[in-house]
Amino acid sequence: MKLWLLVDPLYYWLTRLTYIGRYRKHPSNIFRVRLTRYKGKEVMLEDGTLIKKNDILVKIHLHNVRLINDFFHVKNDVKKAFYIYNVVKESLPGLATYVLTHKRSAEIKGIIGITTLNKGTKRLGFESVSIQNIFYKCIKMTTFLPIHLLSLSHPNFHNVVKQPIPKYIFMSKSRLISMYVRPPKPIRNLQRRERDVSS
Image (tube, rainbow, N blue to C red; front, side, top):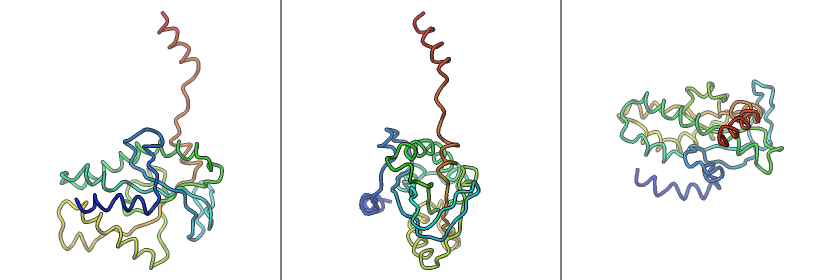
């Protein structure tokens, strides 16, 4: 764990990531992001959005060191999964605001990530797509292995070998915004509150 804490700042610098939390002043946000041009095969999402080669996407990275540090002493894998699901759900509104207000928002087609945590992603609005390139899949499995080992409550040969297969996750910009941008409060309610305060 201490080694990973030392490596993480270098990883952050090399991957040119941006903290969503710093952008929106929400330090609880679990995402670190950067713009990327998609290089995979065409993907048609459920809402009709077509992701093509060289489309601009926001690539999302979970802040894994923070996650592992938060549940390092939790031994129940179900509780860990539940915690990750909730912290991602709580962070998505900040990500939606980031995309909507980005200077290149008009060009952004959606968001993309690579994860081995595929359970619950559909409920959050994501769509999972298998990685077709075998070489790239092997690279990702190798890079995810240290995180997988650190996250295990009871490491043994069986659950080390049974490392989950990483997959792409996509969400279109329109779905992200429709699901996670909170509409402004009605002016009528605000005026009523102002009268209450003045009285």
